[in-house]
Every structure is written in C-alpha cells, then in structure tokens.
Length: 199
Image (cartoon, rainbow, N blue to C red):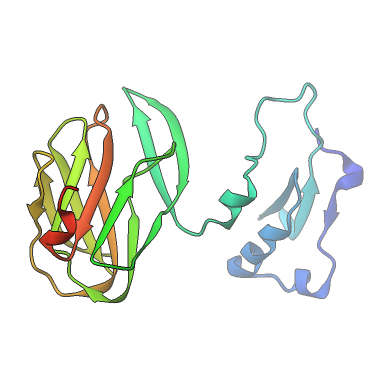
C-alpha cells in the first residue's frame, strides 16, 4: 500500500533535534493529505511517510468546511438522537450585543443551538426578568457570567418571570435546555420589567 518512492525521513537540523513529544506534535500541522509520522522503538529516526490513495476510493474523506465555519472560533455541539446518534451539527457560538435594556434572541435559522448564546454589554448589567416562547414546557434556563454558572431556572410557561439578583457583569452566556421533541422559538431578556412588555 505504501509507495516507497514517497517515503522520506526528516533530514533538516530542526527535524533531527525533535526528540520531545511537544516538538514532534508541533510538526503535525505540516503533514499533508495521506501523510503520517512514524516513530517508536523500531524506528531509529522519526520518519514521514506518504500513503497512496486506496483503489477503489472509500466513501470517507476530510471534512470540507466553508470559509464561514473556518472563521468561527467558538463552537457548541448539538446531538439529536433516539437510541443512537443520528446527526451532529457544528454551530458557531452566537454573540449578541446588548445596546439597551432588553435583548431578544430568535430561532430564525437552522441549524440553531440554544447552548452558549453569549451576550456582551458595554457596561456591567444584571438581568432582572425574562420570557421564553416554546412549543411545550418545562424548559430550563442556565445563565453564566464569565463562564461561571450563576443560576438555573425552570420555566413552566410563556409568561415573564423574575431572575435572581446577581452581581452585574459585562459578559453573560445563556443556555436554554428543553426535551428533544420541544422547539424553543424565542428568548427575551431584560434588565427591567418594562423592557418585556408585550407590544
């Protein structure tokens, strides 16, 4: 399977001195498609090898990500399953800017995740109330400040509800968790009750 013409050992000065695992690990990013790094007791010098493509070609391949996905820095992982995993969606973490007293987050595109919705404010704020629209209840709201869980609230209907008073912060992260069969459509959150008046 291995084409001997494509086998070569490291021969640069930096390659030969790569004795530690961290040095070798830093070279992994330089490996091309179909290449591998071989090392161990039976290999006196770390060796880069190249494998020919299989014939016939298998159905597996590298994942091709769009430029939008490549530029995403934070990820949430949604799993939809019934006994076994059916789908996995990689979803860029949503960032929202709070410019007034209230913020509304809507599920307006698919795939969508209610995990890890980040809210950024120019000044420290403390949210006092919220409202969640879902197909069914209960749903659970979890709020984090600077990645530390501040509180968990079980929501049983679409009415506005009060949030516990916590220290004001500039960065918040919100999770809305519901049963797999329940769709959550909207979260409205505010620093005052007047901001959530149904208009």
